[in-house]
Length: 390
Image (tube, rainbow, N blue to C red; front, side, top):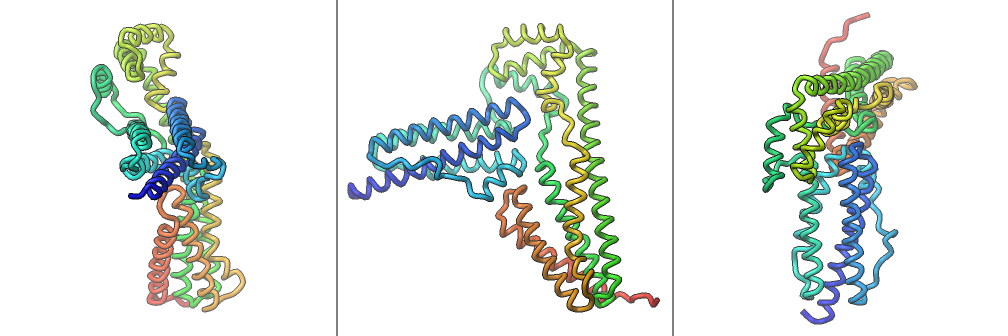
């Protein structure tokens, strides 16, 4: 490799690593702002700051080599990537980030450039990126092998805890709205297709479609409301159960709290002393244990917001196949309804990728194919089935 080509290779690798650090920082900062658990949010902020440190070290090496450092402000997340970081479940984004960290270790930091100083820097950052991936896996609940007191404390804590902490993995009301539109569109498109096949696109399609749209919207709204209420009731029941455990088994709960503190890096003697002091104030102890075991003891989202988002989005999705029949009937209405419905299927499928982190076009095409299958099958059923006279 000639000197010029070697320099180009170094510049390319450093710039690639630099852009990756900027993008990772942006993702972690977005997730930290969304994360409701203060401890996890603090971890995400530390990861973001670590990416800043990596970027600054890369910039220093680039200046030493005479490589122009780009403007950080020119590096942005793509629109879809940013929306996914804002909407998708935090755990799914973290899982994708963990995979990206692992890929960067091999692809960006794992191969030599031919320059010892640059390779040494990339190797150091690669090791730290590997630690980031391990940190994310720990946040996601992956079980690894520990050493010393932390491993012992972890095993003892697992024996004490009768349930594991659950993290909400839904996409919030935005995710609920997307899935509501999906359900409403799919269900009512099937109704419209079937009745169109039976009546050749007659006026009865409008009545059946509107009835289906209203029923779907109301069903989704009440279901979302009850689901959120149930989650709140479960959270309150768990909190009361934890309070009873403190009252009935105070020594076990003190040990549990001491072990939690040890896993956070507090020495065993100090952790035990802190646990005993907190035990003198049961409500304070309850708050700490609830934060660790129940994610802060939160009761989920707002049931009225969930009902409104689910109901309205379902109604919007459901009304799309029906609309053409409000103005025309017959074959023309059937064709227009099918076209607009399949376009809507693609758009809703693409929107779902905000929550699932799949490719938007693949998700859109999959949803469109499902619409073709459902609509075609039900239209055929409508044509075959006899229609009662009168």
